[in-house]
Image 1 (cartoon, protein in one colour):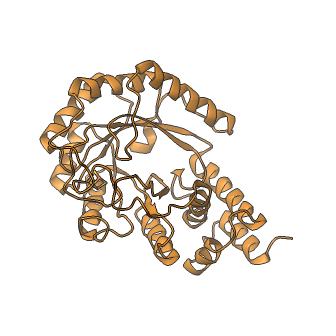
Image 2 (cartoon, rainbow, N blue to C red; image 1 turned 135 degrees about the horizontal axis):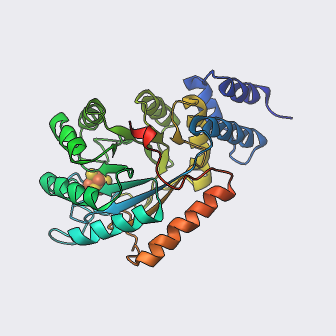
Length: 325
Ligand code: SF4
């Protein structure tokens, strides 16, 4: 027999009445292996399928550099304080364009260009222009870079960027070298310039008060992203946060389900329903070696397409430009 209060929260969310903060906190305290947690996950999937029209998405990320980053986020292997390598370490421009072309032909639904805050903005604009010229017009490009002004957001849009990934991280200003206000100002500038927002509640790990996680979920929902979720900490050896205990993927997915109940159908993609998967190439901040073999990248996209389809998602052959209008 399900706990009636949990059943009621989920049923009301499906009918359009989002749980309040106290109800979110109550759900967060439930054993992730319980029948109640399974009901929460089910409710999140119902809402996620409704929000996206049953569409699954494959996103590709290209890491542009592994330069020691002055923003010094404690969890990031590229932070200057964690990165033992010296000087700039940038993926050659022609390699970036090549990866983008491979992902475009393979039929992903968005390409993210990710760079550290040390990456020169003018160089980034040149990369965007080159990549934009090498891929189809319907392929959305997303910038995942350091903080920007409104003027820079406008320049990104003019160069061919449709979306931005930016997050006001949990512990911003404490575990990172960035004032929270700067992160929030970047998000506001990007949206004012007409860029779609992808963001997340990140990084979550054991030891962060559940109240902080719930508050950040509500903040993200209020920012009206087109895609979001919960990002669990990757405790990278050698970083300042290597000894923190991340939540399991299952626990993080459960938290994302609670966020989905709170978001309802306001966020089309991600957020506890499993309709977004990622592949990547180039540099990355989690210390993993990525394949540069184009055949591997194509196979990876095919694999992800099959996985989404197996889970009952409709996976379009090309991007849905309507999300970025
Ligand atoms: S997470 Fe981003 S901003 Fe922070 S140190 Fe790493 S590259 Fe720099």
